[in-house]
Amino acid sequence: MPVEFISAINANRASDVDPSAGHGFDHEFAHEYAKVLDEGGFDYTLVPYSSSWIDANQFAQFVVNHTERLKPMLAHRPGVIFPTHAARAFATLDQIGRGRLAIHIIAGGQDAEQRREGDYLSKAERYARADEYIQILRRVWTETEPFDHDGAYYKFEGFRSEIRPYQDAIPVSVGGSSEEAYRVGGRQGDIFGLWGEPLAETKQQIDSVNAQADAAGRPHPRIWVSFRPIVAATDDLAWERAHELLGRIETGYADRAAKRHYPIAGTTVPQNVGSQRLLALAERGELHDRALWTAPAKATNAAGSSTALVGSPETVAAALLDYVDIGCELLSIRGFDPFDDAIGYAKHVLPLVRQELAHRKPATV
Image (cartoon, rainbow, N blue to C red):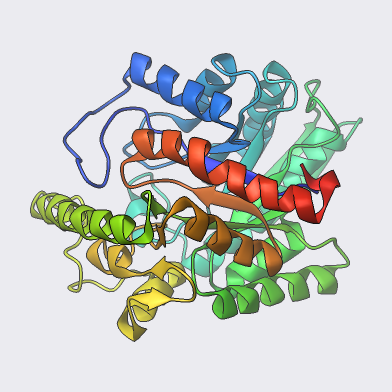
């Protein structure tokens, strides 16, 4: 499979460095952002999910309707809608996009966020439910006769869908850094998502996921690794920009904490293992491997993907290729200044990575 690039689309101009720059759904901005990603050579864009954001399913259809080749990586939280309904909705969107859809299953890392939408299961139960949910999705997409299901979390009788995915199936992604995530992702995922950690730790996580896939007799999932690159013409200029952005990030998160949108960094330990790992990594040091910078993770209390790759386009491209060398096939790069950074990545970083891969294996591009 070729190495592919993922970004993340925003519905308005708000960002980590300027959280007050926009709100709600800005049609013109979202359209222009989708166009930048589509024409810039990104293969996927993550369509994020939160209890307080715009509806991700409808935003994913907006992306499909306003692009030619870009594939939505649609974040979806089991427990919000029934899996038979979700399977039909996804298959319909995949038909509209002629096969341009992948689903990223979010089991849920924070109890408080889950409870905002009435989900009171424990973390372990949420992962078990996600496992059952994925199995139902695939049965709906493939069964030709009505079927029953009687599981731990879902029960129904005589279900059959007349709408199928555009191709044989829709790729399903799972992410996380806990043992439950490795188990469900290895046994059910076509793709597995990781946040950016040092190469050694990333390789250990890949091995854990692959061991679960081996135990289930399944192919290894494609590995998706996520970074927030900070790029400038030279390494020195990139580091100047990195420290300037860090100050703006700290100010933005302090403002959000004051409004209780996020916990103040250092005062609350996140429940999800991925964030805990990033904060522990930041305590070990700010700079790892070629260009991995952890200060933004500390500033944001590791609220999602928050480690950066800092340097010139050549340095960041080389760092991304280091992850390709250990088995990562999907490279997620999203900036702290998302729109302008996406333009810069498309112009300066993606071509360098693809040029090197073309020299190594002409069939990968």
